[in-house]
Image (tube, rainbow, N blue to C red; front, top):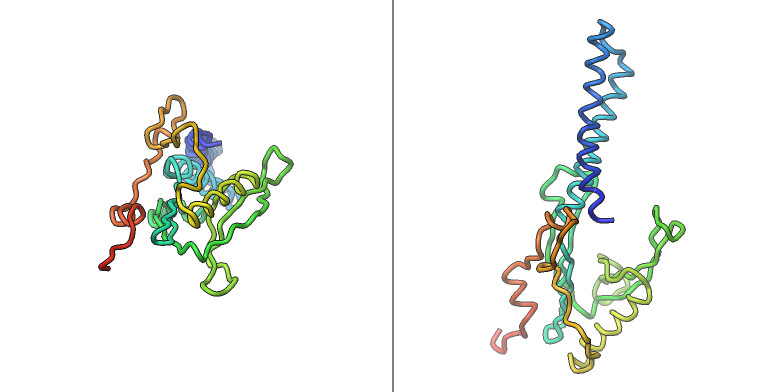
Length: 216
């Protein structure tokens, strides 16, 4: 669905302008001010259309091209590149953007869940998330997306466990190299053209690709 919102956004921006324009035309043609109820309807419509336009635009153009997860066996850490967004604050800069977060491998637990929405599968789809548990307890303190369906999630989680327990030699051999979303050729999808590339903070990028120092 990515790429639809970037075209819905201009329509909503035009709609936000249309509501006050209609009130002005009404006042000019009728030679009287519109009623309070009509003004309130126009104001609500303008705010809603402006909010929807900004939300659609930012969801399509500010989400990164990918949200990679790095597993570091030597440090027993998992590094997650996550896109955070807040629909209640579409104009906020601090509430939107990609952030790199670090979790302890021993505190992660895979979960299968159902998400309900307007989907072609009858209203729900099954996904796999990784729950971050409070150390020594079953209390969930955070969750992040891991896979789009149960079968894919089981496969990915099994590979992650193999890597963290036995190392890269335990993984199967893949016929093709992993896809690099940063360097993919984008032709027609405007949203993906405008989307920022994945950029790990320098310190986390180095830490996630190295073993702990013997002296640190």
